[in-house]
Image 1 (spheres, rainbow, N blue to C red):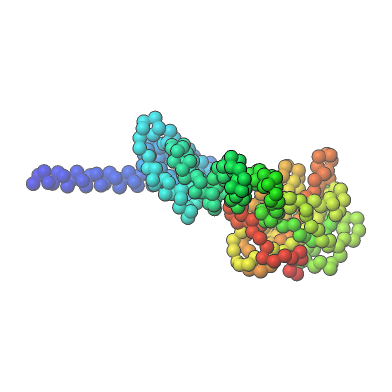
Image 2: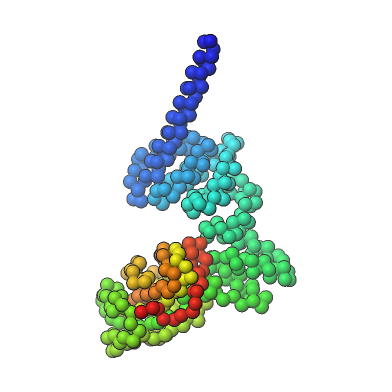
Length: 376
């Protein structure tokens, strides 16, 4: 009888300890997730980090589940904890919950940064398993996860001759989202007689209406509210920097959709220009406007101001700025304000931008119908 009571007491003690351990891990992860973007909470987080790492491999699924709940700084702490656990497990040959981590990776409802960490952990702990999984990510909604799978397709295509090789290049084109990989694929396909429509692939807007140059003396034009910011009227004439200005049609023939404002307006200094276009969506949906420019800029969608940056000539790249938007079904009016400064150096002559419409994975969205003019 005493033995039975002892066994029950032991089981109760184990259950209590397990609950305490789980609660302790949850509390530690909550502390890490609460770290502020400026490092608020670092002292408490340091102790919590040690608590998480001490749990070993069994804590990895809970760490992954905590990623994305806090700031990027908090995610860095969690990533470091997970990596440390993997390193320690490798030294001690401790088993890892590989199946749980793989299931987490393949669950597309999980936050992107958490799934990226899951794949990184698999790659760190079991490269062979990562190599087995990666090809299945070729159409993953997370752009960075599909990149490796696309590279595998590129490598296969390079080693395959004839029509089979061309089919692999076309398969890679359908999956690719990154600019550098796209250039490689497009170049090879062109040699094989297949011209790639890069603006269409990426979703660049190439048909615009432009008006300018307006005054940006003393860089006051960024904050100045010119008439297009209130309402767009294509028949309207404005008082420009050097006289009356009107809206002009403009079509970009650049492979990456660049709108070079020096072409219609000349090599201007201290100038502002506006560009307006319509994107027709066949359904109401979430999307992204992705902008690249060296100049100061602002962007509106359907009359609503989205964002802007008042800085000049700090470099330009595709998808430099990403704006999450909600597209209406039908026409959506996009307005871009692009400012050029006083240009005291010869290398600051660029006055241009590129803008594309895509989903969160970088998949270019296609206009439901072709139109140059925004709705009034």
